[in-house]
Length: 332
Image 1 (tube, one colour):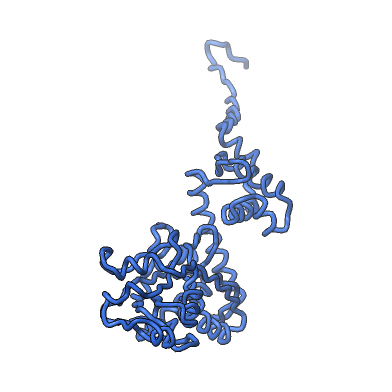
Image 2 (tube, rainbow, N blue to C red):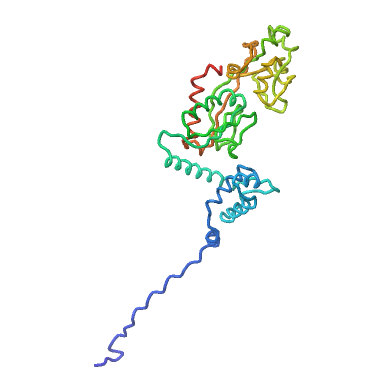
């Protein structure tokens, strides 16, 4: 029997839910999706930072300089930020570029550490380490000791750069550096290695043919060997003293401490030198006024913060620290 509309309720079938609306990604997200990160571009970025110009970076990476520019530009598009201020062929990091550099070097350190863990045993030390050092310390102290470290670890490859100028670790002029002036870069681990005492030396032949030296007042007529005027000169002497005046205006000047040592050994005059150089030098050098003319400098070790955990860099640092601790007599 059929029901009338008043007697039977009207049954309405349930409606199907509408499919959810797809949200459009924000413009910046869409842009990132169109410009995915290529991690190989970061390698070009790091090399350009360290080389300083596309031409030098291209030479290091064995590519054309246009490839370097193109890959860095691609990274900037992917990150949607400007990494460099460009002036002709000079690329200077922006503030954002500095932040990206710090993060990229941290990742590089992790990759290097992981590679060592996979490829080497717990005791093996292998791979390249670039060591920068003040010329005298590098040539006369580090060179023979690092050679011994390489003998102990045949897969370790050390490059020693000995010079009088500062090393820029962010550009990988060195992985580890030993310098006289304390650096101010915050991204580096800085540790005082030791105090270094310098004394006035001259060859025996020079002293025999020159006026006798009994005190600092007798130094005026003598010839001095020292640094060029545009190089750092910070002796711990009274700047009003005759000794300071004579040391800061030498008759024979060189940017290189090893050259100064050889000039003194040849009888060229009086020279301020550290004991560890004189002990290993050829020639008959004699200390002059050791109590009055003692100068104390500080030797600093610096390493990039992100490299300290990598085994081969840590091994070189620890080895040099141990050597200096055992041989304190060479520095006092």
